[in-house]
Length: 166
Image (tube, rainbow, N blue to C red; front, side, top):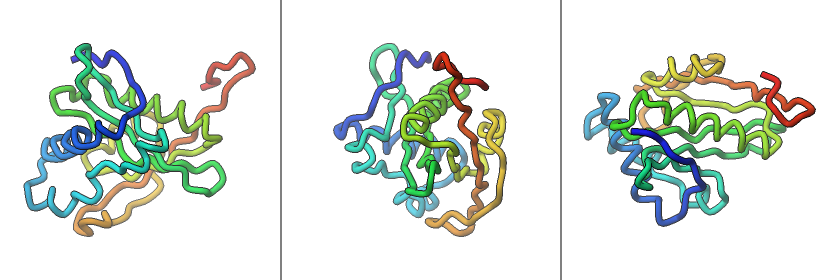
């Protein structure tokens, strides 16, 4: 599957995006009991969609295949990555990387300098390959038996011509 575009999410995308998060999490090997515990963290936040902080990757037919959600923290340039979820049919196709690039671009527009990421054990390699640095571990608030890796990604500054200097 090819991701043909990334666009801001609409409120009417919410149910489908939540289902992408559920499918992606099940694909990581979590059972229905875990999904039930995780559900508050998997359900898309409508306020973030309304604020223009959720972006959807679509395939050539306009079918949503993944999304990324961001949240400003109010702490001087720190942006929280609420999550990147990719439909398992598009795993390892570049959709997650494209969504992360969108997160970086939008974070920069919000005067962000660092993106804070709480990563499931299954996504650690993905964030490390993108250049995020592991800064710690924390229990998942909705299921304390799951340890999340904390990453920080330093947003590369723009050069004079508007291109990233990284």
